[in-house]
Length: 218
Ligand code: DX5
Ligand code: ZN
Image 1 (cartoon, rainbow, N blue to C red):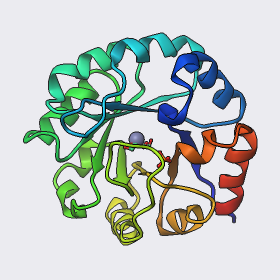
Image 2: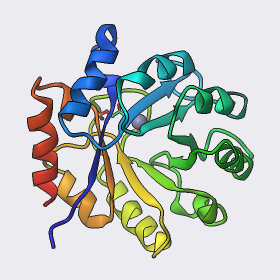
Image 3: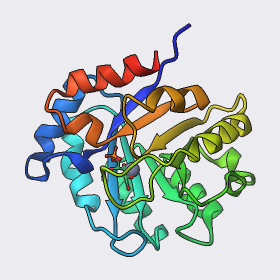
Protein backbone atom coordinates (compact mmCIF):
# COMPACT_ATOMS: atom_id res chain seq x y z
CA UNK A 1 0.00 0.00 0.00
CA UNK A 2 1.48 3.40 -0.94
CA UNK A 3 2.30 5.87 1.79
CA UNK A 4 -0.19 8.68 2.16
CA UNK A 5 0.45 11.97 3.85
CA UNK A 6 -1.46 15.14 4.55
CA UNK A 7 -0.11 18.36 3.07
CA UNK A 8 -0.28 21.53 5.13
CA UNK A 9 0.97 24.47 3.06
CA UNK A 10 2.52 27.22 5.17
CA UNK A 11 1.03 30.59 4.28
CA UNK A 12 4.25 32.19 5.53
CA UNK A 13 5.37 31.87 1.91
CA UNK A 14 2.10 33.23 0.48
CA UNK A 15 1.50 36.77 -0.76
CA UNK A 16 0.53 38.55 2.47
CA UNK A 17 -1.27 41.27 0.51
CA UNK A 18 -3.68 38.63 -0.87
CA UNK A 19 -3.89 36.15 2.00
CA UNK A 20 -7.58 35.27 1.68
CA UNK A 21 -7.20 34.58 -2.02
CA UNK A 22 -4.05 32.52 -1.35
CA UNK A 23 -5.88 30.39 1.22
CA UNK A 24 -8.72 29.77 -1.26
CA UNK A 25 -6.15 28.82 -3.88
CA UNK A 26 -4.39 26.19 -1.75
CA UNK A 27 -7.78 24.86 -0.66
CA UNK A 28 -8.81 24.48 -4.32
CA UNK A 29 -5.40 22.93 -5.06
CA UNK A 30 -6.17 20.06 -2.68
CA UNK A 31 -4.33 20.84 0.55
CA UNK A 32 -5.40 18.99 3.69
CA UNK A 33 -4.66 21.67 6.30
CA UNK A 34 -3.73 25.35 6.17
CA UNK A 35 -0.57 25.96 8.22
CA UNK A 36 -0.43 29.37 9.91
CA UNK A 37 2.93 30.43 11.37
CA UNK A 38 2.62 32.85 14.27
CA UNK A 39 5.89 34.52 15.30
CA UNK A 40 6.55 37.11 17.98
CA UNK A 41 10.06 38.48 17.39
CA UNK A 42 10.99 37.10 20.80
CA UNK A 43 10.78 33.30 20.78
CA UNK A 44 11.87 33.46 17.14
CA UNK A 45 13.64 36.29 15.29
CA UNK A 46 10.71 37.24 13.06
CA UNK A 47 7.22 38.72 13.48
CA UNK A 48 4.22 37.57 11.48
CA UNK A 49 0.54 37.59 12.35
CA UNK A 50 -1.87 37.38 15.26
CA UNK A 51 -5.35 36.07 16.06
CA UNK A 52 -7.16 38.80 14.11
CA UNK A 53 -5.59 37.54 10.89
CA UNK A 54 -6.58 33.95 11.72
CA UNK A 55 -10.13 35.22 12.28
CA UNK A 56 -10.10 37.07 8.96
CA UNK A 57 -8.91 33.95 7.13
CA UNK A 58 -11.45 31.61 8.75
CA UNK A 59 -14.28 32.26 6.24
CA UNK A 60 -11.97 31.51 3.30
CA UNK A 61 -11.69 27.76 3.90
CA UNK A 62 -13.41 24.90 5.67
CA UNK A 63 -10.16 22.99 5.93
CA UNK A 64 -8.55 22.78 9.35
CA UNK A 65 -6.48 25.80 10.34
CA UNK A 66 -3.22 24.34 11.66
CA UNK A 67 -1.88 27.13 13.84
CA UNK A 68 1.80 26.93 14.83
CA UNK A 69 2.53 29.28 17.70
CA UNK A 70 6.17 30.36 17.91
CA UNK A 71 5.57 32.78 20.75
CA UNK A 72 6.39 33.12 24.39
CA UNK A 73 4.56 33.49 26.68
CA UNK A 74 1.93 31.43 24.92
CA UNK A 75 -0.73 30.77 27.55
CA UNK A 76 -2.22 34.32 27.53
CA UNK A 77 -3.02 33.98 23.81
CA UNK A 78 -4.49 30.48 23.56
CA UNK A 79 -8.09 31.58 24.02
CA UNK A 80 -7.77 34.30 21.38
CA UNK A 81 -6.42 31.83 18.82
CA UNK A 82 -9.15 29.33 19.70
CA UNK A 83 -11.87 31.96 19.35
CA UNK A 84 -10.38 33.11 16.05
CA UNK A 85 -11.25 29.71 14.55
CA UNK A 86 -8.07 27.65 14.85
CA UNK A 87 -8.63 23.88 14.68
CA UNK A 88 -5.19 22.69 15.77
CA UNK A 89 -3.14 24.84 18.13
CA UNK A 90 0.52 23.85 18.46
CA UNK A 91 2.82 25.26 21.11
CA UNK A 92 6.57 24.82 21.43
CA UNK A 93 7.94 22.62 24.19
CA UNK A 94 10.66 25.24 24.67
CA UNK A 95 8.28 28.20 24.91
CA UNK A 96 7.20 27.86 28.50
CA UNK A 97 7.80 25.93 31.69
CA UNK A 98 4.25 24.58 31.94
CA UNK A 99 3.77 22.60 28.74
CA UNK A 100 1.35 20.21 30.39
CA UNK A 101 -0.88 23.10 31.44
CA UNK A 102 -0.78 24.73 27.98
CA UNK A 103 -1.87 21.46 26.35
CA UNK A 104 -4.70 21.01 28.83
CA UNK A 105 -5.91 24.56 28.16
CA UNK A 106 -5.96 23.99 24.38
CA UNK A 107 -8.08 20.84 24.78
CA UNK A 108 -10.36 22.57 27.27
CA UNK A 109 -11.01 25.18 24.57
CA UNK A 110 -12.23 22.35 22.33
CA UNK A 111 -9.22 22.38 20.01
CA UNK A 112 -6.67 19.79 18.99
CA UNK A 113 -3.47 20.23 20.97
CA UNK A 114 -0.06 20.07 19.34
CA UNK A 115 3.47 20.21 20.71
CA UNK A 116 6.42 21.29 18.60
CA UNK A 117 10.11 20.47 19.10
CA UNK A 118 13.00 22.60 17.88
CA UNK A 119 15.83 20.72 16.15
CA UNK A 120 17.99 20.69 19.31
CA UNK A 121 15.20 19.41 21.57
CA UNK A 122 15.25 15.68 22.31
CA UNK A 123 12.23 13.47 21.69
CA UNK A 124 12.11 12.66 25.41
CA UNK A 125 10.50 16.03 26.15
CA UNK A 126 7.13 14.58 25.07
CA UNK A 127 7.34 11.44 27.22
CA UNK A 128 5.06 12.66 30.00
CA UNK A 129 2.63 14.69 27.86
CA UNK A 130 2.11 12.23 25.03
CA UNK A 131 -1.39 11.31 26.16
CA UNK A 132 -2.40 14.98 26.14
CA UNK A 133 -1.54 15.73 22.52
CA UNK A 134 -3.29 15.22 19.20
CA UNK A 135 -0.29 16.23 17.10
CA UNK A 136 3.50 16.31 17.46
CA UNK A 137 5.38 18.74 15.21
CA UNK A 138 9.05 18.03 14.53
CA UNK A 139 10.87 21.12 13.27
CA UNK A 140 13.37 20.31 10.54
CA UNK A 141 14.68 23.90 10.48
CA UNK A 142 15.23 26.37 13.28
CA UNK A 143 11.91 28.20 13.36
CA UNK A 144 11.66 31.78 12.20
CA UNK A 145 11.82 31.83 8.44
CA UNK A 146 10.64 30.00 5.37
CA UNK A 147 13.03 28.76 2.71
CA UNK A 148 15.70 27.27 5.00
CA UNK A 149 17.55 24.00 4.39
CA UNK A 150 16.19 20.77 5.88
CA UNK A 151 18.26 19.49 8.82
CA UNK A 152 18.91 15.80 8.08
CA UNK A 153 19.57 14.78 11.69
CA UNK A 154 15.86 15.22 12.41
CA UNK A 155 14.88 12.13 10.39
CA UNK A 156 16.09 9.96 13.27
CA UNK A 157 13.99 11.99 15.69
CA UNK A 158 10.91 11.54 13.49
CA UNK A 159 11.50 7.78 13.52
CA UNK A 160 11.98 7.79 17.31
CA UNK A 161 8.80 9.77 17.94
CA UNK A 162 6.87 7.58 15.50
CA UNK A 163 7.85 4.65 17.72
CA UNK A 164 6.82 6.50 20.87
CA UNK A 165 3.39 7.26 19.36
CA UNK A 166 2.74 3.58 18.68
CA UNK A 167 -0.97 3.03 18.05
CA UNK A 168 -2.10 6.30 19.64
CA UNK A 169 -4.26 8.59 17.47
CA UNK A 170 -1.56 11.27 17.24
CA UNK A 171 -0.47 12.88 13.98
CA UNK A 172 3.25 13.37 13.39
CA UNK A 173 3.82 16.61 11.50
CA UNK A 174 7.12 17.73 10.03
CA UNK A 175 7.91 21.38 9.25
CA UNK A 176 10.82 23.09 7.54
CA UNK A 177 12.64 22.67 4.27
CA UNK A 178 10.31 19.95 2.99
CA UNK A 179 10.55 19.35 -0.75
CA UNK A 180 10.23 16.53 -3.27
CA UNK A 181 13.78 15.36 -2.51
CA UNK A 182 13.24 14.72 1.21
CA UNK A 183 9.46 14.09 1.48
CA UNK A 184 9.94 10.36 0.91
CA UNK A 185 12.48 10.04 3.73
CA UNK A 186 10.25 12.04 6.07
CA UNK A 187 7.21 9.89 5.34
CA UNK A 188 9.31 6.73 5.50
CA UNK A 189 10.40 7.68 9.02
CA UNK A 190 6.77 8.11 10.06
CA UNK A 191 5.79 11.68 9.15
CA UNK A 192 2.02 11.92 8.54
CA UNK A 193 1.59 15.63 7.84
CA UNK A 194 4.07 17.56 5.72
CA UNK A 195 4.23 21.33 6.10
CA UNK A 196 5.52 23.01 2.98
CA UNK A 197 5.96 26.74 2.45
CA UNK A 198 8.33 27.50 -0.38
CA UNK A 199 7.82 24.10 -2.04
CA UNK A 200 4.13 24.95 -2.55
CA UNK A 201 4.13 28.71 -3.06
CA UNK A 202 7.32 29.39 -5.02
CA UNK A 203 6.25 27.87 -8.34
CA UNK A 204 2.81 29.38 -8.88
CA UNK A 205 1.02 26.10 -9.70
CA UNK A 206 -0.11 25.04 -6.23
CA UNK A 207 -1.97 21.96 -7.40
CA UNK A 208 1.10 20.65 -9.22
CA UNK A 209 3.33 21.37 -6.21
CA UNK A 210 1.02 19.57 -3.78
CA UNK A 211 0.69 16.68 -6.23
CA UNK A 212 4.47 16.46 -6.60
CA UNK A 213 4.90 16.17 -2.82
CA UNK A 214 2.27 13.41 -2.65
CA UNK A 215 3.90 11.60 -5.57
CA UNK A 216 7.34 11.86 -3.92
CA UNK A 217 5.93 10.00 -0.93
CA UNK A 218 3.81 7.43 -2.71
C1 DX5 B 1 9.40 28.04 10.01
C2 DX5 B 1 7.93 27.73 9.85
C3 DX5 B 1 7.63 26.87 8.69
C4 DX5 B 1 8.09 27.45 7.38
C5 DX5 B 1 8.11 26.38 6.34
O1 DX5 B 1 9.60 28.70 11.21
O2 DX5 B 1 7.41 27.09 11.00
O3 DX5 B 1 6.27 26.52 8.66
O4 DX5 B 1 7.28 28.48 6.95
O5 DX5 B 1 8.58 26.95 5.17
P1 DX5 B 1 9.53 26.12 4.19
O6 DX5 B 1 8.73 24.95 3.73
O7 DX5 B 1 9.86 27.08 3.13
O8 DX5 B 1 10.74 25.70 5.01
ZN1 ZN C 1 5.34 26.21 10.91
